[in-house]
Length: 414
Image 1 (cartoon, rainbow, N blue to C red):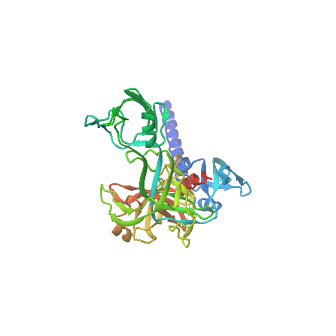
Image 2: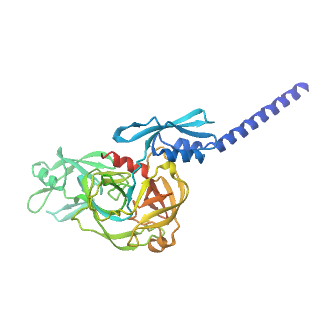
Image 3: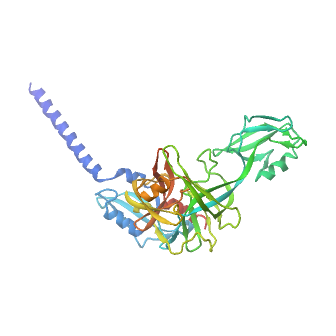
């Protein structure tokens, strides 16, 4: 009997200890944002001011402080000035270190205007899955190639554009030839049967092109060298989200002629026209974070009276913000609300979720539509990101990318 009482008392003590331990653990968990700490990558763009603000706002919890040494500033690759931010538990236990690339003090010109763009591919892209036998007047399904495939080599010879295809095929004497393509970032090879046209010339029998045109929106332009970032997401083949390899490209002035409003299951679009002459800038890079290059110094899309500093992800907070867009015909700010901001341990063009609150923009476009990708997102007087995607089931909601990712891509061009 006494033994049973002793065991019962012991069990009660264990239960009380476990309960107390869980209570303490939940208290610390509530006051430490482990999710944000985990999401934060090892290197970020920020400023001393933003780090101080994050510290004062207890952004990572009441028990986590941020420290750095302002004197410990060095020049990293690409010319960035860098420091180190140390996250400390209870003010003295280091739990994470992050390299801080210091944001430039210089303001940038704000974008928000639509641009026409043409990129020239590194190869020739298949635009029809049909195989056309001109000699026998037959059209059949090509069982090897798909829409969006980029032809890189034929018979071992590199293909830089569509003209190279004819030159290489002129020298092929076999009934088949090896065609190397890139599909969704993967290189594949096929032995394709060859066809002849009515003049006896050897053909692959498929439709191809070596450039892609479209529209997007300019995000920002650097004052010092007119380097720009735009779009916020890659130029793709339209069939997938894979980033196309390009040789180069050009951007052009673009005239807005109409708007198809966004509705449920219809993303809508800006209807713009542009002429592929008198370009206003180069496209030197196509990445998953947008297109990058340099504008002409006299480019008419630059508004020298509209400039902002760039903000890093540490300055982004859920709450009121604005997007800059010229959908009304002039550059204007429209009210949005940032619903969620992820710190992202892995880079992505869906850094934040926002909702359009401005009734003027809702009346004009229904919210976010195709062509608005790249529109600057402004919070607390800084450009902190760019619009990238619209929610298909709700055109008033969209995704945005942090300016950090775009700035890093632009800096790598130097």
